[in-house]
Image (cartoon, rainbow, N blue to C red; front, side):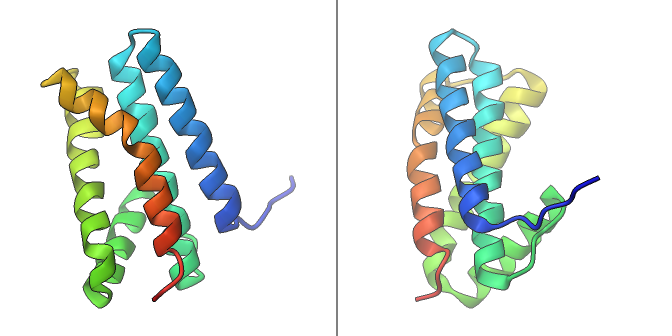
Length: 129
């Protein structure tokens, strides 16, 4: 078995790939799957941010969340991104994907579309100011 060390540029690229998949699912009328793919893109972008800032690859979603909270506590410029992360976690992942409650639909669609901006902002913040 071959193992590779993850690097932030590859993870950011995967986040963009997942976002494109989310947009395809949204266009096909599958909002629930689109929401989960947009959440995955959000999580991957945040994972890359954490890796860039700490040189540590968080292995699981809760580790990504804890690391993001720690980074935001130390760097106020990351706090808005942290808040957007939690909104996406609750709305896209928790409510829409897990429970099927994707309302208001306009808000869910907007979060899905705005995932590209989240990825961009995470990448911008991946280097400390």
